[in-house]
Amino acid sequence: MAKILIVGSGDIGGRLAKILIQKGHVVVGLRRTPPINPSPQMLTFLADVTLPQDLSNLDSDFEQVFFAIAPDKRDEVHYRSIYEAGIQNLLAYFSRHQAQAHWIFISSTRVYGQNRGEWVDESSVTEPDSRTGQILCRAEERILAENRQNVIVRFSGIYGPGRERLLRIAHNKEAIQSDPPYYTNRIHQEDCAGILAFLFERRLAGQSLAQCYLASDDEPAPLHEVISWLSKQMKVGDGARGKNGRAHSQNKRCHNERIKSLGYVFKFPNYQSGYQPLIRAC
Image (tube, rainbow, N blue to C red; front, side, top):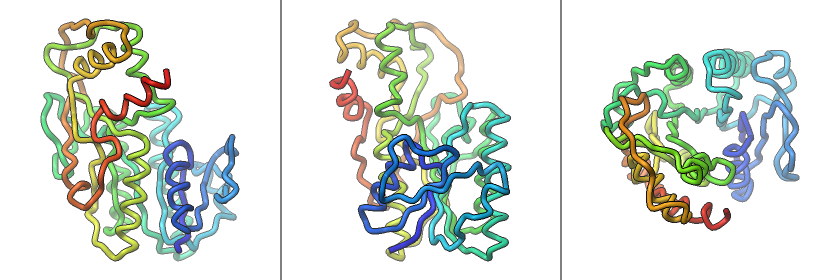
């Protein structure tokens, strides 16, 4: 049994907490606001990580820390507040208490700058054009500089209940870039939580982990193809209307062999299997 801190116990963090609690671990969820449907088995610590004083009563004897906060907005100000100030405040707090927790840091494929449909993996160059991507890169470096045994997990586009943007695009019959192909990558939120719990259990069992894992399903696909399939499944059209486009900052294909070779089996290995339950629930 381990004592675990999940920093940012929202959707992904909450799903992760349920898995870990079922396995017998003690889980503390750090949140800025009280949960709407609190779990009686998960302890909640209310704090804003951007305010050092909010952390003054936080326990420090955690074996594992998951950093899973999602910024309120995808802009430089919000990214800096979480991935610079927030991380620094937590690391400084644990350092003052001489805490030695292992960290698993949730990052994003936004750190990649490739935009011509290239394949990327954990060894690919990370030179993002966006300021948010650059801030994430520095956060990754900070986490690994603190402890070379810490782990970075880069999620691609997360979808699932409550994250149904592509269903809305298909329903609205929006024209989608088809030439040149705009490749997209995704991971179901259940696999997000599953991978995080899997990595922790592997480490707990004494298995050596790599410093970075790219977490995305088996099937990168052009957005036009995905929307066309969705529109047919939803019976709102015979396929998406195509249009010419331009190079896109996130046009790449994510390779997931490292996490699969470690033994993780995706619950939703492609967009078809993941979106079917969402379509049925519409």
